View: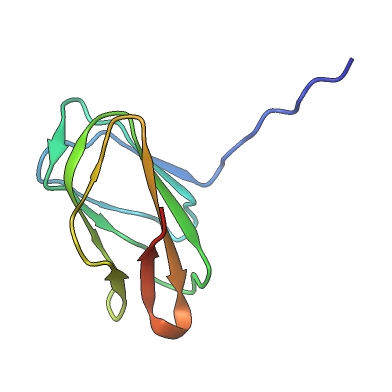
Length: 107
């Protein structure tokens, strides 16, 4: 009998944000986990700078997040450039396309 191997995600970041908090994803992060102690709003999510072409970052939340503002690094933009909500237990994803200097919300 064989067992499935465990899945490890060594490139994650964990935050326990409150209202009006700014967080930044590291260049090496593929997953950012938000674990707010209460429903949170007014969170600024800074996407990483650097050579990150074709990078996908998944942002997951264990609580309700309202008004998350994704922000690109200097010289890059986020499409669409609107605040988003992340309901408890869900996630969103961003993809970076270097030739356009754009982060796309893809999920």
